Each structure stands twice: as C-alpha cells, then as structure tokens.
Image (cartoon, rainbow, N blue to C red; front, top):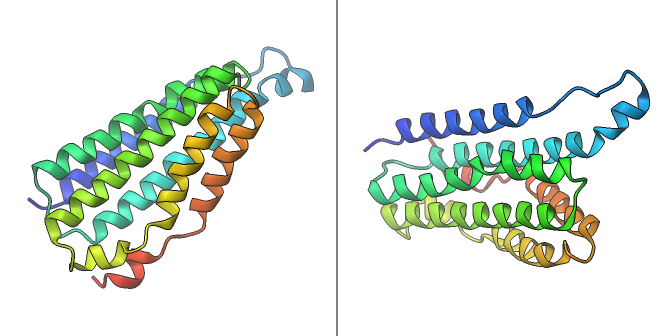
Length: 191
C-alpha cells in the first residue's frame, strides 16, 4: 500500500482537531480589557495546543516523506496516534476554562504523553516494515528529543498536583524543543 491516503487522512483529522479547538474559543463577555484578560487562560491553552498539533502535523509529514509503503500495522499505529491527537481539543478546553487547575493540567499531560508514545510506536512500526538498515531507520537514528519529551511529560503530570504552573512550563518547554526543526529525515532521505 502507498502512503498517500494515510497522509491525506491524517492531515484531515489534524485539521479538524484544530478547527474544533478554535470553535471552542468564545469572544469576551464584555468590551473592556478586563473581559479580554479573563479569556487569557483559554486563549493561552489554545495557542499551546495549536503549536503541539502543528508540530505533530509537521513531523508526521516529514516521517511519511521517508516511507515507501504502509501495511495494516502502520494504519493501526497511525490511528492510535490520531486518537490521542483528537483528545487535544477536549483537554485544551478543560484546562483553559479551569485556569490550568491541577486535574485538567495533569490530564492534558497524560494526553500529550500518550500522543508522544503513539508517535514513537508509529515510527517503530514504520522502521519494522522498512528494515533497520532502511533510509528511514538511519534518518530517525537517535531519538533523544522523543525520549526527553516523554520524560518531561512523566515529570509534569504528577507535578501538576503541586504546582500546575510548573507542569505547564514543562509542556511549553517540550513544545519549544520541538519548534527547533528536526532535520534528521530531510538530511538522510533524498527523494
């Protein structure tokens, strides 16, 4: 099976998740600065989640540039990733509407953690299909940022119950880390 359909489907799912998030944004109740500032937690959580979904979309696109074919295991691994990404709008709204309270912040982190694990599983499934000596396997090589992201989520989730602001700072740090372009595939896979 060729990878084109899986990429198109995934693009659509991520676009819908972003659309759902923006539709949950409400205009301020009043016309003054205080009304606008009251919406800051909701808007901040939206911005963070938009960045996360953008990072996943970009990395998913790059990952599938190095893929020659897919199979049933890849389809299910991809659906597993998309499942967690479609929960981002829910956790984003819950966290923002409750001003980054402990439980919503922790659940947001759990969704990010499980999306990160799902992405790792997808990459490993693709490497298993293409072989450990494939261009894809060579391109992915050291997955330091992947592992560090998971570690930071694991730290942030329980931290949310003591210092939710610190957990949020770790989520922001992971997003910033991934905003730095990952050129492993672009450098190692020539198409």
